[in-house]
Image (cartoon, rainbow, N blue to C red):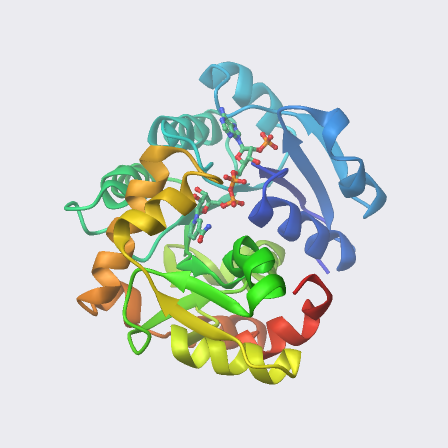
Length: 289
Ligand SMILES: NC(=O)c1ccc[n+]([C@@H]2O[C@H](COP(=O)([O-])OP(=O)(O)OC[C@H]3O[C@@H](n4cnc5c(N)ncnc54)[C@H](OP(=O)(O)O)[C@@H]3O)[C@@H](O)[C@H]2O)c1
């Protein structure tokens, strides 16, 4: 068991907090780097240390925090300026002589025709040119996004989206992304210069509805709506730039573009475990639905 010091930046978010908790449960020496340490008591309870760190600090300020650690996980934030925030963190890691850095990206990072591609592509480029020992964790659409439809499923057993019900696409459960990242960070020497795409399932919305029906023991159905209706629903939970980016991903799914339909065995290869299917996921979280 490695006792190298690991710091996770962006640790208050979904991916960051799940990774910190997974690392803590594996007795790793893990620190959550967050903008507001008062807001993450549950990470301390889980056994992590907490330190104030902001990807928006100057490079040298951030480097002065990072120099106390060996390995770094940059959870690229869901922020309109995420390209600069993540690149700043990579440069600070260089200045701090971080021994290994893992960065969150997306499967469509090579696609400069979409906003998210244009945001993540320069981050991956910067990382590859940094001279650092790096890894990239590309994450597709989260299985957990179904929580955004919990009220609809509870009230009328339906969830909505803008694509045909039979179009397949890959998803990742946050717990799988976290376990994969923890596995990499506990033993980074095996993962230098590697780009992983962590996928939990390739399935269509209709197939997901079948899994939800089985898990909840009542019929759940998927209903196709217009892109405009989906955008209106997304605007209740995320900012407009991000909603537009998500709609571009749905367009890629509609076209069955490779980045959205390629299932990889990276999760199983890394962790030796079976990924969390939509069925397992819904069985695990059924009380919320
Ligand atoms: N939802 C999906 O389906 C999906 C799929 C693939 C990829 N992604 C992307 O994967 C990444 C991780 O997802 P997530 O849901 O865990 O991310 P998130 O919650 O949107 O962001 C992660 C964290 O970044 C931190 N952060 C640091 N500096 C920041 C700054 N200046 N402004 C805003 N935030 C800052 C925040 O943590 P602190 O408060 O601790 O600093 C925030 O909690 C995001 O980029 C997300 O867009 C999402």
